[in-house]
Each structure stands twice: as C-alpha cells, then as structure tokens.
Image 1: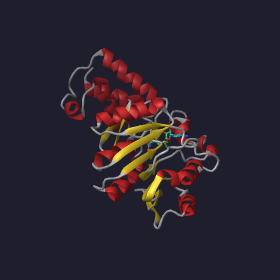
Image 2: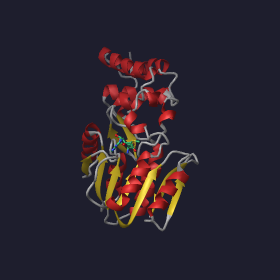
Image 3: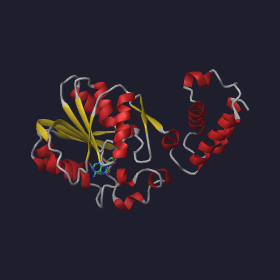
Length: 275
Ligand SMILES: C[S@@+](CC[C@H](N)C(=O)[O-])C[C@H]1O[C@@H](n2cnc3c(N)ncnc32)[C@H](O)[C@@H]1O
C-alpha cells in the first residue's frame, strides 16, 4: 500500500470526525514521524505493515470519539507544539484570544506573570515566548500536567518556573504583576451534556467549575490582594455566559480602574480583565 491509499482508508475509517481528510493526514504524519513538507512529497511511497497497523489503530481510537490531540500526543497553539497527556486539557483556539490580549498589553515590559491552571503550559509558555522580558510562573494542581508543561517550555525554548498547588486551598506566598487564568469554568450539571470527546476524554478536573461554574473566579478574586501587585492586571478566559458575573467579582475586589471584556472570533464573550 502507498501513502495516498492509506490516506483513503483512514478517511473512510474516521468519516464521522470533524475533518476526515485533515485528521487522516495528521495520523499518517504521526505514524511515519514525518512533517507536512516530507508528507507532501512522499504520497507515492510504500508504507510498511507496521505503519499501516499503527495508523489504523489511531483511526479506530478516533472513531470511538477520542480527541485527536490525545491520539497524536500533541496539539498546536500560537504556532507552537505542545505535548499532551490524559491529565491535560487540549489547548483551544479560543484561548489564543486570551493570550493575544495579554501579550498585547505586556509588550516588552519587564513583568512577572502567574498562569493559574496551566495544563499544557500553553498560556504561560506563549507569554514567555512572545514577551521576552517577562518572568513567567505556571501553577497547576496536577504534577503530571506540570511535568509536561516544563517539557513544553524547554521544547519551545523558554524558561518558566512552576508551582504545584491547589489554588482553592493554598497560599501562593508571592505577588505578581499579571495574573492570567483559563480555569475550569463549566457548571457541574452541564458537563454531562457536553460532546463525548470532551466529557468522556478530557480531565474532569480541567472542566468542572462547580455548581455555578464560578468557583475558581471567586477564589482567585478573593486572594487577588495577596497575589497581585498594586497596579497589576488580571485576565481570565470565561464561558460565553459568565461575563457579567466575573466582571462583578472583579469590581468587588476594588482593585481595578478599568474592567472590561473581549469577544472571541465567533462573537462570544471570551475574556474578562481588570487593570
Ligand atoms: C480549563 S484547564 C486550562 C488548561 C490550560 N491553561 C489551557 O488553557 O489549555 C484548567 C486547569 O486547571 C487545573 N486545576 C483544576 N483544579 C485546580 C486547582 N484546585 N488548583 C490548581 N489548578 C487546578 C487543571 O488541572 C487544568 O490544567
């Protein structure tokens, strides 16, 4: 079998996925450990039985609803590659709105940044990459996620510090100029209604924002006086219906002159900030 024949087989096997052709290409590149440039000039090359078996196994997992990011073991975010494991939420394009917002505000200023609930490290690492004068610390409750975040930082050529802590129950003992967070923000009752890819495969700990979805925003706002320097900025990713509630929490801190929000490319409220 040659590569383009395998491509056809894979496309048939995952025909119910979002984009069978694109996903089949990614599976082939992963099974062959080649990049897109090499893939494009190799479509008539013969593939070994081992590669075919490996690619078909990956397609089978995809067919059963597993997100491609976990099957490939990585995902792209802000033009960089991030390794994933089952304790890590797959970075979403929506989160790039939050990162772009923060990067634009920081520019080349020399600031300390704390990314709360870092997962793959995608937010903190992107800030460290694009804002060279920042000093970035990432925090997560999952040691397994933090180990991968540190590996992702190294692979993407940035240095970050990490803190393994439960933000709901611990003191950080340090202040930062910028707090950024995409915390778990889905209401507990809503999780069971989400698509299989999310509710059956992504870590529950990365999704569950408690009964009203706001438990992490409430806690972070409560401890802002202990973790945010005077004149600092906080920026959160939020669920599409959480803008008013999160803006109100920021108002109640009394720490910000300017509180506002940004929409994502689909027109949904996605970022709430205070500065
Ligand atoms: C929505 S995910 C965001 C991951 C990543 N920042 C992103 O944007 O793709 C939330 C993260 O918060 C972490 N988390 C959940 N509960 C936590 C807690 N009590 N303390 C610290 N981190 C927590 C999860 O492990 C997960 O990595």
